[in-house]
Image 1 (cartoon, one colour):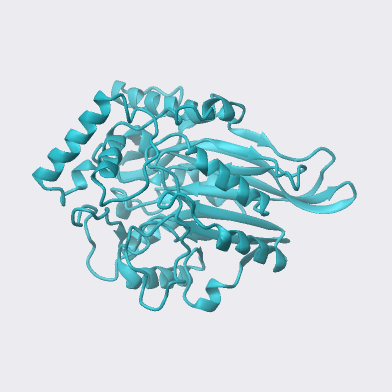
Image 2 (tube, rainbow, N blue to C red; image 1 turned 120 degrees about the vertical axis):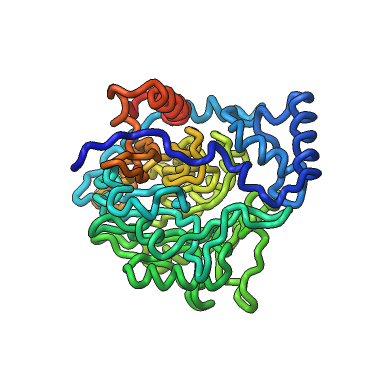
Length: 448
């Protein structure tokens, strides 16, 4: 391998510059709202504001978090103390007396977005995390973009009251989803950007995934498939996959196809209806699934703690039979919780509230940091009975960086621990220190 030099990625620090649709009057109004909130001592900790891009207060709150992420939990919720026992990177989840006969490894990463240099990074983007991700028996990611059926649209190509646009070319899709002879096995498409290129973008993405042998979750080609459990075999383990998004950025679902994307309006409504999601878990069990993995595109952007209500939702989902919950969307990493269901106290359910961005659209350290999760699923016996359980969890913080190779810059995902102890220039050392402080906030220090 030729000599390479790692450096912070050369992208804008934050996304505010992409808001070309904001005229001077709107920018002034948002600035005033932020100043008023700060003067009143607000917005330094999370606020209970429903998602609404047409609400100036929400957009002002969103914009200031983009530049100044919130590292504290909601006041009075006790979340810092609650998550303290889970601030570590490795968990042994085997119940006492469980004997493992066979074990499978699942990897999970966060958002795949159209980051800079992607098209020039074929087989290099994942070189440093090759085994972490693709050495697993099953690799999962959230595809936070679709293939543009025509000309690519810019991230800021939208009107006031709209949302950023994320789409990729077919070549960029290939780089994001493949590495050498490997690929992601399962991609979540249920996210708020799934309709950025309309139904045509979804169909183009599904066709590309089909040609690559990649399974998709959360989006359906027919109503019959929308009502059929997604069951995939990993060795001798039948795994049911369920994926929901909190919204599709107010874009209309295709005419006559309200079933095309699984949506549960977390954060859009005070009391979202979880009945479809919960019934899907039961349907997966009835279909013979040994393990059910629920993938949720949810949470508040640029906040390092989940909202208190998310714990309530997650616990309902775990009590309904989910074996693991994988969260994406906040664009920063958030804590993990190990939950013991009351109806199955011998079982440990990892709840990964947010894995962050594996490939981001910003260069700020808080958004180039993500977590690669590796879950072990063990097949064995407990008290003489055959069981298939999540038996271990390992979390690895990863940085999205620029890599200079033979005078050219490409993108690279690099485990943060691999950067510790290396001789770095002062700018890179400062950047790594910042990445490390955010990792410590969520994972403690045993990732080092």
